[in-house]
Image 1 (tube, rainbow, N blue to C red):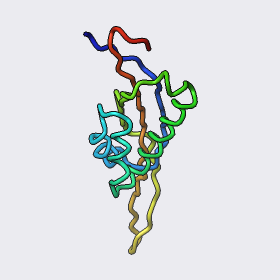
Image 2: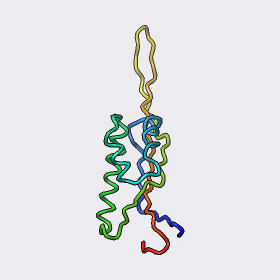
Image 3: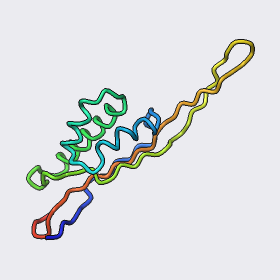
Image 4: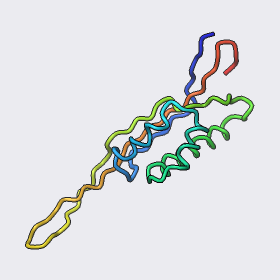
Length: 125
């Protein structure tokens, strides 16, 4: 039997207040995993990015449950793709002693998550 994949939900956010390098480390842990398993992984991580991803995935799961009855959804809803890229960089000046100044860069992240369900050829979508 050949497995087909169908896109369920897609999420975009361009202004996450965290650096892309920090959230990419956490996203590597949950890529290509089922949504229940990834929520279980994220709830025990101490990083700030794990809390952000946990809230986003939990909201996506609730929206999917509200869109369609639970009987239509299979148990295997998984994260097909997580794209993380640099967003806007807000630059601020921090003044130092002796007339010097430093440039502070507050980085943001562009995030896109795609969820899919995996079904076999014989079953309905």
